Image (cartoon, rainbow, N blue to C red):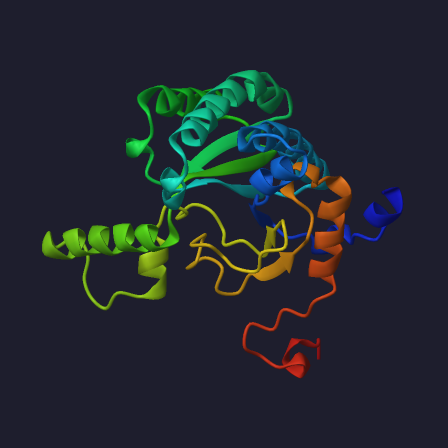
Length: 248
């Protein structure tokens, strides 16, 4: 693992990494266990990746924790996930504070169970002064709904004369849940799936995508290092040519 870490260029780290934590259910099935068993074991991965990102100097880490589509899962799994989230927030609050990590959330929190929402608000409040890294949980999140939310905010401001046309890309970005968060430079998806699944679809316009076959409960620091090394091997041109990027 140290050999992989030594391959990382500290001067070319992504400022913001986003992760679609996929494969908990399939991992549990492979171990002949209920799906919630996979979610419980996924906490180990979350803890290790958060600590590893903080140690590397990553400033923003966004985890796709619960999508709006996830409400369609079996009720016992949804209930178990909400209970697990509350337990994790309470048990990890001391670690977040000790490691100087600020917790933020994106998504429509108003439709979460009241005890889940209260646990989130408490953790966000108690870590608000931390400065080492920002850990963002995407909860009851939908990329399309986020864009609709932003558009409606803009329409209201236009009607009230608080904003004037033309509406620009910056206008829309400034009304998203992530308005104070830079766009991710690297997005990682585990478990072998190759899609965004309605996650940060506006923000990922120029994000480098890294897909791995590893199920999330088995994803460890070594896998994160591999993703960062892959990211650093790519040329990010943003529509320009290689020659334009070269120093004159």
